[in-house]
Length: 185
Image (cartoon, rainbow, N blue to C red; front, side, top):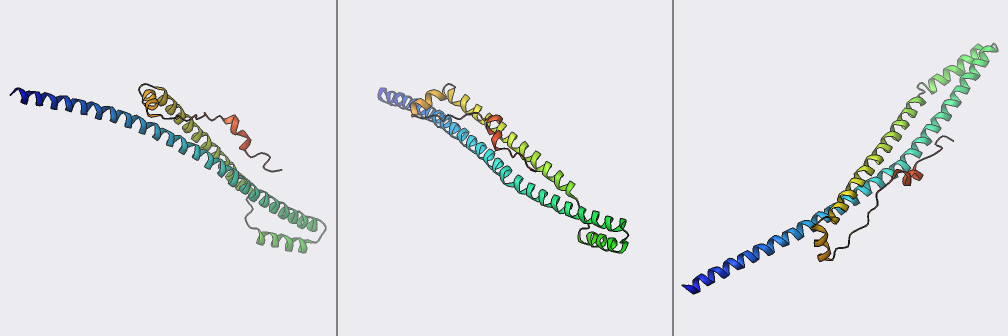
């Protein structure tokens, strides 16, 4: 009977030790996984910033080229209309009417102002996206830094030999050089 009670006591102690080891293991794994998840969120946020900046650098100059081409096209059309008006003023009404008629047939819908509005919209949208992604990135960096510096995570990571990453906060001034300048020169 005494042996039976001793075996029960040993089983209870073993169960408590195993439960404690399991609990500690779960805490270690949970903390490690949350740090890895935060690192991945930072990487994703950084990638979103890069994608938006690339979009700005690709899309905006191409859009500006389109606007400039259309601006040139409208200028040439306006010159033809002015030529027709001059012909009219010089008494060549028939020649002026022909020229004007050809211009209207060739270019019935001149709307560079819509292109400028679209360009402004694209610029604003892209800049807002970049600013938003920077805010998310900075929030992710803050969460990561708080997590790796807080107890018990900092102790657990030290025990596991984890090397924390040094993520820097992004600032708008540092990325201002990526902004397109002198778009219409």
